[in-house]
Length: 274
Image 1 (cartoon, rainbow, N blue to C red):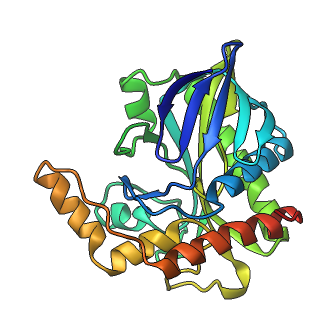
Image 2 (tube, rainbow, N blue to C red):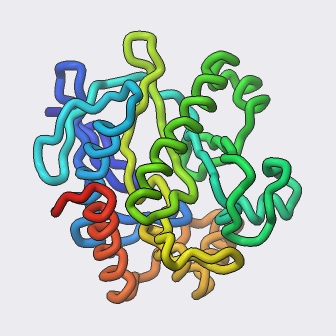
């Protein structure tokens, strides 16, 4: 089995028969910075969540089977160079981009932090080390996709967000936003990569309140700690100077909280024990 490369979270191997092996690690990244401290059981949760969502969603996908607690086998695809982001709430980077006049939000949406948008927003980005927000026109101008492909990605991503939101809601969670990736398999656009707490923000309905930072069951816990301690600004300043940001050590309480919440969210949403 040939090693292809490592991403921020997973290692990828070519299985030589039209399939790939994804090996999920306990690594974590935030603000495009990779951290040295592992999050225990994170890889296991990402593996199980990927299996759960791919089997649950009524969309063609490249998942074949799980082969260990942190490995899955998938069909090899030609990946589409767009990350399909759907936002259901006024939160995260959307807030700053809206204030800067860089993006419009659906008509009738409130602009208090964590307010639900009047309708979900398709907000794609490029696929790169530092993702860049794009729109339909940019996607077509750069020839990333055709018009029909963009329309398909938008409508399918919005449908998947709605389907996942209903499942999360019935388990007592709010799905705030979601990132999906697609590829082409035998000429057909197919859902790919993985789906789990590294690809979405999820909040417990019990503590949800408009106008405040939300309790999080995903890696937003790390982002919030970094922002509160000035690291997000330090990362931005380092990049402006042309150097790579240095990842700080993650406090043990943050590591423990993330690990526990990854496991809890899986068990609550799926009804299964890890």
